[in-house]
Figure 1 (cartoon, rainbow, N blue to C red):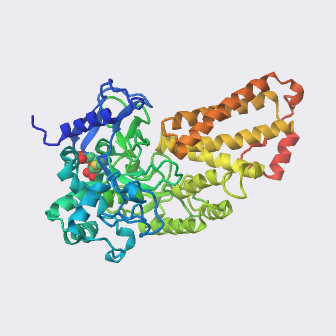
Figure 2: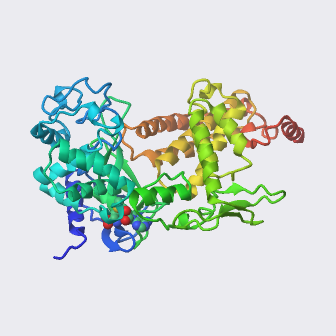
Figure 3: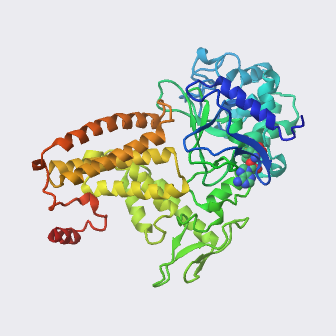
Length: 555
Ligand SMILES: C[S@@+](CC[C@H](N)C(=O)[O-])C[C@H]1O[C@@H](n2cnc3c(N)ncnc32)[C@H](O)[C@@H]1O
């Protein structure tokens, strides 16, 4: 049958992936609930053929091939372990650095090893203009080698989108001409049409997923890239409805992160969720060769979050400065206040964002005070839900309680409250921009439970809380732990998220025992019901001496 868009090739890949997947990951007998269709302007995309519930497994995807990213440290080409130096151990056949002799025939390394060995060329660091680009040709070479040794994988790979026509003449094309095409033709002596190598690099640019390597026993997984054909069939939306998890054998499991209605696309996000429209659209244009026009991109308020908005500085105005046309192809439409129409150029907004970005980079992720200083500096310039302020809250939510000098038991009431509020504010944004089952939600809920539990237990120890309130707070914490587990239960135990999920499972059991015990405690352990002061229930603004005293007087 005619298959101009190679859709059957993708269905075959689905069957192959299911056959390779461990049985606990997917019900092998269940029929797929989606189809692939060609729809403009998306090209091929995945459509639900029936209503799908949140959390349902949609498909598993086996990688066609994985390999180093374009820029890379020195790594073992078989197991992707980070190596100390170029010449620790070099493959006896091809000369590329590996962990040791055991890795010579492992993983995907034989794909390039044979080509290098046949060429007689031995790689030397000085052959690369920039050391970080020395691995750039490796994955394209692996892909090309598939055409010789694994024709089925090759058929799947070559059926993917390369956008050669859009890429030709771009800076990216020129760089790949030098670092990949010329390198493979001149050094590795491949006898191959240049256009085919460009097609391969295009397929990799458009479709690759970043994945973590999985080396048993290491807590430092190195990031590599891989081709997952079914994942790559999903269109990008800046608010998406699927969630993917990488299992230990590098199989990708894709679930519905929110309910998906029959006829809707199953979508993924190719950009960073917590970045603003201009940044996301630029990334998609230059890296994926399309202009995103999704609901989030077309709305200057980014679905009511005001994620990119500045506060108007005109006296007495208090409006929000927003892009007048977020879909302008060159992202250069002026920005204007939604109340007084005061105008700011797109370039100025971009410069401001860049300046704050540089300050944040300098501040690092070790000292919350540095981030608090930047937060204070810009809190009246940016909308409270501006991505930089939300980004700072995200960092603070993890730093308070985790970095040296700010471990949980050392935190003051005000710092605990700050951690709680950072988590809550972040979750409020995630509800809109990253709804449903996500790693970030799971981790943030976990961060939220800890200070709340500490606050409640401190209040109990100091007898400053009533029994009913104490139980209510413990049950609230139980709810957050429960939701953490729900959000992270798909993550493999070897990952950080999987480990947090395991800890959350233990914590919730302990907490439930504690709740049962508290229920039986006599009232004498608690503050009488009418006299309570619960700092945790005051907002940060409330925590001035004046307002605190006033509230105490009112009791
Ligand atoms: C990873 S591929 C997705 C599969 C692709 N549609 C195909 O037929 O092979 C990415 C490409 O799909 C298209 N695409 C994905 N999301 C899109 C969107 N929201 N709007 C327009 N095109 C999109 C773009 O051409 C993009 O370069």
